[in-house]
Image 1 (cartoon, rainbow, N blue to C red):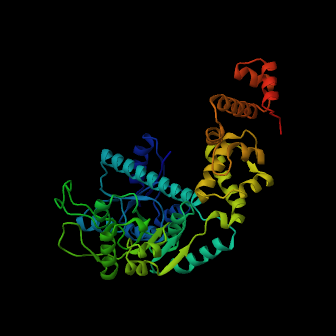
Image 2 (image 1 turned 180 degrees about the horizontal axis):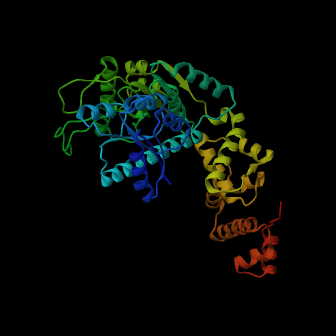
Image 3 (image 1 turned 90 degrees about the vertical axis):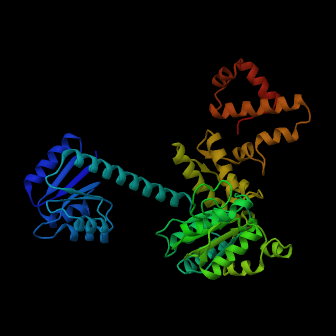
Length: 450
């Protein structure tokens, strides 16, 4: 039930509004004392505030200003017998959601309260999702390499220095960019992201700088580019090594001048943007090949951050596995599953060409497929073999259709046995065979319980 607070020095007004809203299943509290109302706001949980302007102790504008300073998540509807454009504008500037004139019209009140309550619910849900995202997408690792990266981030994030993040696919370049943004003085604005490799070369300039209506075929209306959207904030150019030379020249000019020009436009637009870029390519080699501008490289590479591949920091694997396992179990409502020391050792023996992204996918596969709460080395080897799944292994090793069928049958029997806690009767029933037939299969394929 959504909670409403009324602060108005006229008790009759409070009682009248309370009766209307409670009939619509809102929980309503009220006070005729402004100071008491501020205390209720500070320590209570309300979605919407109905606030009078003219009160003896503190007026509504003072309370609105106080709410803004305290950063209280609430939507305020100002109610006043002294309505004027000046008061409405002043209230709006202080963050009021709506302005209603006394005597209160019932229908207008209900519409305004419903809209305010719905909006604050969306804002709170958004904040919750952001918190969950920060918990999920955080930089994990005990290695000296990760600790050095975190130290560098804390040192440079609050500056406006441009940062170039390098590393193989799956190492977590985007996470580093997000952490820089989170700690930066520009974090009040959303981080604007552009994947340069995912946008066709002919559209990258429009994506970055926007375009005017009619500037090219298909430009049916004006479009604001990412540089303008990121004005006052951070712009993350991911996979910048894949950007066309023409677009590179425009990015360089935007950095040097602090101005951009939309495609098809003639006027310069001021932009205050801090650029964070990332690439999995060796840009020095790309410069030698003529694929990347050296002057742009030096502009972007003010603060270099290199993320080493997972195979060079295998001491991070235990904490990463624990983190991913916990997240996956919570997401799927599984009991917490723990990887045994031998399972961790097995995971550390692989090369992880896909780095952390590959590790997370493998952990998710093992957690979902294994019926046990303790993951063993055998589970790891059953569902992963250094870059191939058990299905890949079937195709790679099997040289004949008969061999493929036998290997597939063995894998399926093992999966069903694990899923049913090695209960022979139940497994045989699910497989549609007799128990004696199942025992023959175990003997044929040398399947033994661990």
